[in-house]
Length: 198
Image 1 (tube, one colour):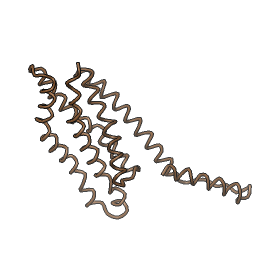
Image 2 (tube, helix red, strand yellow):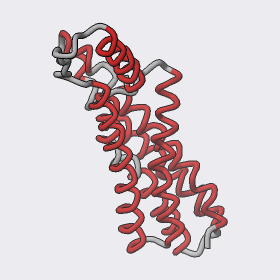
Image 3 (cartoon, one colour):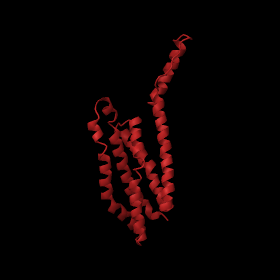
Image 4 (cartoon, one colour):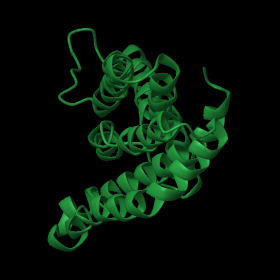
């Protein structure tokens, strides 16, 4: 959409320069490309602010490296999700960006639960490797069920919204599902680095 806006600008400038008299002016009444561009910038800003806040809060509760592992799942799951969306032909537009912002706070929850379990096992005197594997194994079924339940609450949108609004919101629940499932996978796999933490 942003590229399309640039192309329109070029055509419009050429038209104004070549076709219109000097006393005629052309003004835009809507600029979707600017709206989408602003949404992308706003999302990226929110992403980095969320990472900073999560690292700050978790540093008070967890060791620094554990907090960083949890915080890294935010950009990782977001970028992997965008890649999966691209593979499945899901566009990056205002609705899908809104979906990514909606789940921004949720995608770190899985990591926090697994890391908390890992630290609990360490506190009981288990080895780092055992703590990492057992924490992921113990909490995976519960996290999977919770993640599926969160994803499912957004799908009624596909049945209750009709017409143009329904078409507009088609990818909203799919984007949320992709992002949350990727975050779950990362939460389980991220702890394989945990045995090497201080």
